[in-house]
Amino acid sequence: MSLGKAAIVFIFIFSFIAAPYIFPKKEYHFVFSEKTLSPDSFPHIYDGEKKSYNFAYSFRMAPISGSSAAEISTAAIVAQMEAAASAAKNSAQNSSTQTAYGFNSASSTVSQANLSLSTMSYFNPQKGRDPTLSPQDYYTIRKKQEEIERIRREREKQQRVKNNQEMPKIHLQGIVGKSAIINGEMVNEGQKYGGFKVIKVGYDYVIGSFGGKQYRFNIE
Image (tube, rainbow, N blue to C red; front, side, top):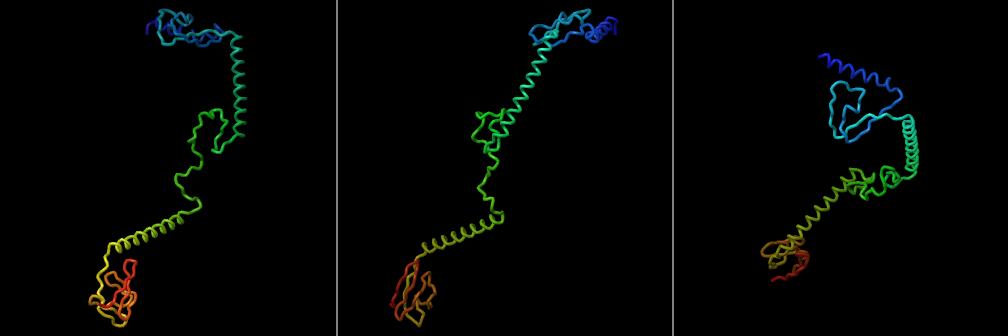
């Protein structure tokens, strides 16, 4: 490192160390502007070759007088006290104002205008399940419903079969006691012949049912 560069570094470090002693009663703050940062803004820390640096928003250091610093400090304290009082007031209002949905309607961070009607409550079940029934109760109810549905389908099937079935031709050829000779076959009272149920056997007739209707046949 050359002596010139070493001297510049030494002066740069010394300037920062000696600045509080050279200006003991001044406080500095940053002032932002749209001007170019030039070495003239910092005359006490530049020595030798001066260069300019361009920034989108440059800044400079400006001293703050004692009265201005005191005013700023006092204003900051007053602002903090007002903020604390406002927070305590809002907290008291929030604790005394509750809504049915479980949130605070007087909150300072959420206004009434921003509340949506679709706000979910704490209890919003996805299904209409009765909380008083246990899973076993629901299982029993479901099994009963399935059994009822099975019986209903079976009855509908039987009814469709009956409706589609045609009544056979009945030729009563004779009577033997409580039996009838139908189309050459012996059919006892209470039995069926091709869907035709023999209800009663008379001395020369037979009464039977088919498809919910009753029929009477005499000996031919």
